[in-house]
Length: 237
Image 1 (spheres, rainbow, N blue to C red):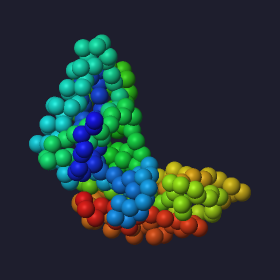
Image 2: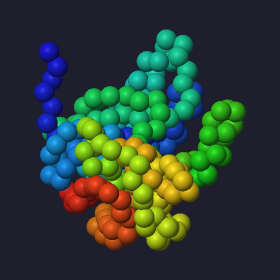
Image 3: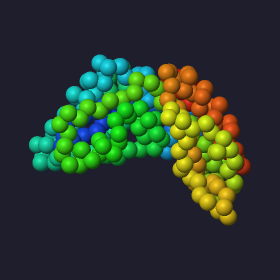
């Protein structure tokens, strides 16, 4: 019988080199399709990083008691891992409880974590792959990054595709505002919807409120038939 958990769902990301933790940060995402966490579960309707539920003390506990403990257990079985490790957690009673491990980046959390990475991702990747990590220090931008996903009407259940997308060229992309394509495709020289999650916009700013306000100002510029996105991403951040 599994333990019944209540609390906040968060994720922690780390770069790993041969079972050594090189960098660790956190994020929260929104799985339900509609505002107020209603409706069916999706692949993710939005996210922000870092999580407001994890302070430096709790992050250190997660690093020591979860990441390092698991990697040490793997090492005892001659399993040496290098790459990305993501642990999904429930913070229950102030303590982290594990719900899932992933050895990959995941969407849409990655879109709010990587903009905060101050290192060059290619440099980090190549140095991990070539065992050249001496002096490598993973640094994270202290600002918040928040994104909102624009999806097709009906997602994650039945939905139609092939609708022309307008306004993406009006999004004010910059060093701290990113537009990510997901379910888009070209058809007869026009950009059209080609999936459930169509695109998302991510913004780096001083805090969650400033980031979310900028994201919603930009996402209003984009339209296609049946476009849907949650209006409450980051409200409880």
